[in-house]
Amino acid sequence: MSDVVSARKAREQLKAAIGVAPWCAGIGVEREDGIGFVVRVNVRPGTDAAALAQIPERVGITVVKVVENDA
Image (cartoon, rainbow, N blue to C red; front, top):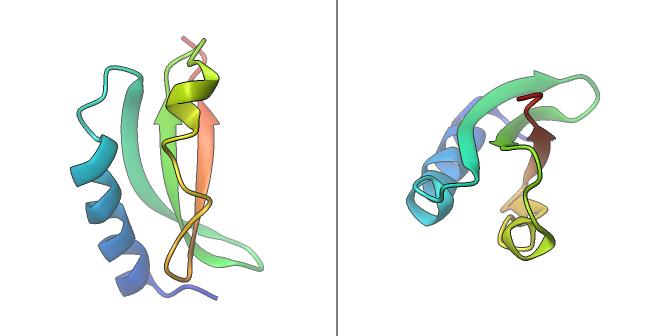
């Protein structure tokens, strides 16, 4: 289970790695029941598989959740 400090560190790592990509709409931290804190990566609609492959499933103990924006 991830704590908020670990999740914030993971967020900063992801921001440095993919935060400026044109398909990335934002990166944040949120609480997920049963998991603890997760990093949420918002991507733009129609993001291709190659771009999504750059997003890891975890950063350390922190789960990364990918969310596609509506528009």
